[in-house]
Image (cartoon, rainbow, N blue to C red; front, side, top):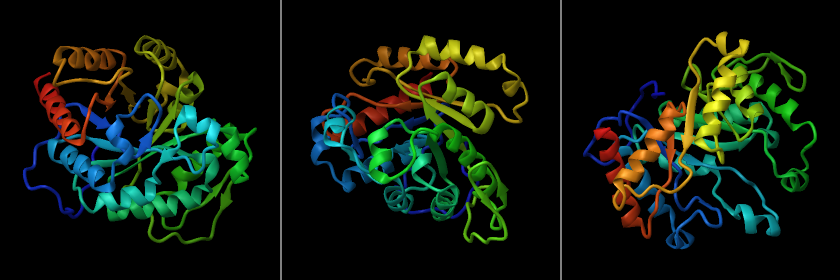
Length: 311
């Protein structure tokens, strides 16, 4: 779960070693979900996002995230939110201003893209970031968005599975070949492709099927909206399957805290939540915080980093 090296990009000079836990953050400002964002984020700017990214980079956090929705119907936006910055453009900018922080899409919707489109565009991002891309990928659940964009919804799971295999074959190969059920290509050149020999593929979702997809086709599972006790039970069931026993590499399990952390105001509570996630099977974390302003958010980042180093 580390980059493969490469040239350093401009960043704050006071470098701190990586945190002992692979802790990432749900980036403020980039996504506004009702009930899950602070008022200051509504008028937040790219400068605010840069300040967060550079602070997380300096403090040794593992990754930050950006989610994808292209277009959200007005009535759906009232529940899911309407703001979703484009991950490719956002990460391309942040890559130039950070040096070790990984850039995790969380998630790209597989049904909105041809796998070669993802491989070329995000492979280029992997190049310009020095090998810091993590592709968080999902099947997608918003049927209205599929309809608006003109993509099929009914067979999206089957298509997603084939797209994952096609991505695995193409992300890091300048002459990719693949022959699947929905995607086929050969005799082509893709230059540049990804810098990493194997870009991590984290599967998002909240069902046992998403975990099974991660075990069979991915490098990690990054669920949302699941209680820690249920995650532990799902992982126990997955470990008993042949697909788990035949994996060549351990599965990254990246878990989110269900309630916002307040490491400044309630360090014991923050530590307890993190301990619970790790006890449930987390190998990495994706954290969100209570915060009333940009400066408060930056203070929370620093306090959380200190708690994790003391753990």
